[in-house]
Length: 226
Image (cartoon, rainbow, N blue to C red; front, side, top):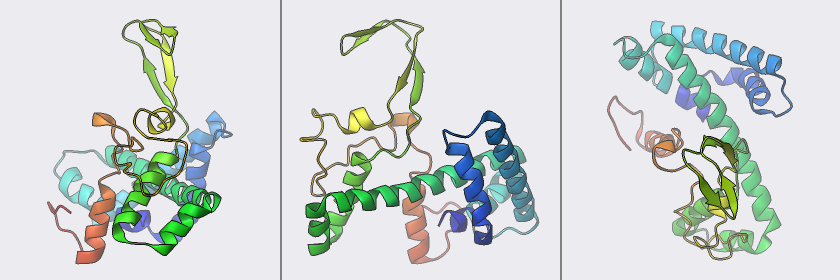
């Protein structure tokens, strides 16, 4: 799906999956990560040039036609966007499918519930609950305290750096979710923060409904909305 949405030839998926794995792996050295970034960047630059010569019905072509040619974005900026969407869009989705399947197998009562009554409302709540229950990215949010603050009895002084566990604490907050460590597909978990919050929400989040609209109604057009 991410290949079709961006306009990346699917026959090249082995190449970009290899680059992607190296970029997100904690075992990757600095030199290996730099090489993967450069190789993926060169590949995407060639792809942007190809879309400039012959646009198609995909996201990179839209950026080229509407932004690059108008001078709003540079070629390198589009390459950077495409790299982020290709890596983040593929790895997070693929891992979510795998971990979601594992979570259902580890909770057979919830799997049985979904199999017995797969109505649209339950399927929707199941997706939200799995997003709450699981954490795909583990790199954490790096922040610097702007003033002294005490969290759970620990003083963090202004200017000190902190790394916040991504999603886990908020999505498992008992004040927000009853019995938060339990997988409950029937619960209303829409207020989870799996995609971030406020201006720091995942930029790929709106692409899922747009792709769904595109797939069911035909190609999107410039300015269309799901």
